[in-house]
Length: 338
Image (cartoon, rainbow, N blue to C red; front, side, top):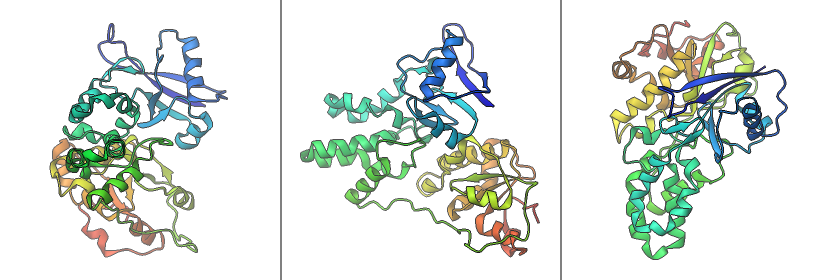
């Protein structure tokens, strides 16, 4: 059963937005656009004309994406929204005001606005600009590289624009992202001799690993790593949540702690609200902000996290092997699994 929650809003008549449910027993659609066309055939008031991208479960997706690829990545429960719900005025259609305003930093290159406009989907592939007012979005990095290649004589002017933006880069939340944004960012890091944030992966599943315990009665939220094979081994139920690929805040903790706590709060409480028993992370600094700063996160959100905790991947492997690590006693959020 395909379960769809489709964002609906008409600024002319609606006081607030809502998500309208649609259910399909048969869903042999070729593309996302074909699905939306089918919805419109039964619901003529639904509008998405002119729309090329939207979000599915908080990830940017092309309307021409193959539907079987969408099902492989998101399963059969889809929340479909415009790129910006805040600026939406009719269903999947929205005002580009926010994106256009960010172009002001490139005002000296007004004649290149047409290329900038092609990057609008990438702009909405990160939440960072919601928290950092001056951040020009992931699209800004691609645009800067374009300007550097087209106007090498203006290199210094262009680099002055991007220098302060570098710490706020995040992995694009974008299915089959076409702009090679991460390679662009690596290029700019080398160009500026900027040391980017590097994740500290904690552990991997040993090839011969056989757990002594399974955890089939536990619901787990996994953050920031593909642990699908791990979930199968332990028969864990994966509680997917919208913020599972959102920035943790760890990458900007030393640059802007206040914003880092806000970002971490979104991830941690979204995982908690998913119904998970705990959040599993495979990066040392993600753990440090989610657990180590949990008191500040709760204070910021004015909420508690009853019976919820964060586990590092190596700690969980140890528990599955029958070991009890002393590190578990040092967690700020009490581990009730032991």
